[in-house]
Amino acid sequence: MKLTRIAVLGGGPGGLYAARLLKLSHPDADVIVYEQSSPETTFGFGVGLASRTQRNLRDADSASLDEIVEVSWPHEMSMQVNGHVARISHGELLAIARTDLLAVLQKHARHAGVELRFGERRGVADVDADLVIAADGINSSARQDFAAEFRPHIDTGDGLYLWCGTDFALPRAVFTPVTTEHGTFVAHAYPYASDRSTFLIETDETTWRNAGFDVTTDQTAPQDSDEKSLKYLQDAFVEALDGHPLIGNRTRWMRFRTVSCERWHTGNVVLLGDSAHTAHYSIGSGTKLAMEDAIALDRAIASSATLAEALDTYERVRRPDVEYLQEIAERSELWWESFPERADLPVDQLMLAYMTRAGKVSVEHFLESAPDVARRGLGSFAGVSAEEVPGANGIEAWVLGQPLDHHGRHFASRRAQPTLRDVEGTEVVDVRMASAWSSDADDFVADPPKCRALWLTGDDDRAAVLTRLDLAERLTRATDALVVVEAPHSNLADLVAGLVSARTHLVSLTTATSG
Image (cartoon, rainbow, N blue to C red):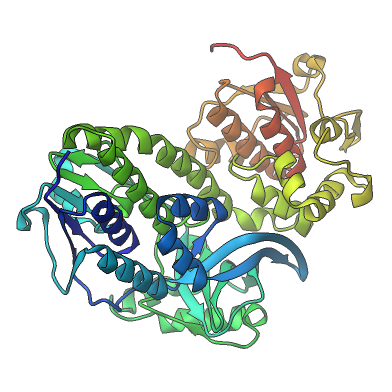
């Protein structure tokens, strides 16, 4: 396939990276990036790059990745709650200033022969090209202009968050809650330079209103930062900040918007990055998704005979990965929105709950990668010392074999006996909910059946099982009933994670059915 002219709308990381890759693949083509802002203009602070993302970028273009790594800042991860800290030493976590990332990508795009036009806002109708890549962000004009073709859906979260920064490098990334007279705020913070760290702070709507931030949000102009909120949060997180200030950059309270589209391309126009999809910041950055989109698009074009075939291939190959990440991100978003409810767990067990919150990481895998924290967390679950916890091999059987005492009843293991399902006092509930935090779930948790045991059953697919575990966690905190989650043996890893994270008391393993 011969492409003579490629137009990229948007000069963010995804657009710049796509432009470079496509120019390298099509050296005779004119590749032009149109960016409405100036080269140095950007919003936000640091961008995180996990090890898998780094591997993907290295496979696609090692030269740009090498320079990105050179100006990035490595860090470890930690969780700090009530003065107790759990630390994980991955050794492969990096963060980079968004300005530095853009500078590297601009440089490498130019070296490849891409033309960068800053201060020029262009729409699809304004460019003449064989291929138009709409990398114009979450408020994409291209997506809006072709809404009938792309059929976008935008879901808005209940929680509120704001991005800010500070003028020193934290010793490591940290998740930490602070409770004030108005409610609880949770910080997601990490260093990205020798003198800079990102601070993302989130809270629930009740706390936000109690603190008066609904008023300050209305009073903050789009080009300004909410200085009253920043000062309040600077005082609230004074310990984590070590006395340093919070810095704004058009910082204001927002609700996360999850974008999805039924189609990503129409004619010669294709969406890339946030214009096509978003995933909650707690599971992966939009930058990661956009740059990996660029890799998939370049490979699809290289392997196809026509543009139509290439865009079909791009969407067919890339969509499952994006939708899988969006599903995980939605569970992670809901977990963080309800974080204060489980902050009473011992910090190592809470870290274990965090790592397994969305079904992406198993207890076995976490025990292999971070044995010290995992063993302490598992010890807290079982009420034993960390030294008594075995290695990853056999950990699932060990978890299932732990006894439970619950309101005067003793259970020899965490596997519910089938007879418990049918005894008087047990209520069997067929869970049919899209989310454990939906309105019908709220109603059920507010007024559950009066019984000694709640046995949660339902469909065998994994999403349904994870939803049952999430609902079970809410019920264990809202009632005195013993909570049992039933699921096929194929979901053993998820059930084990649910047990050690205090999402359920007992589990019942069944044979999968088609129902």
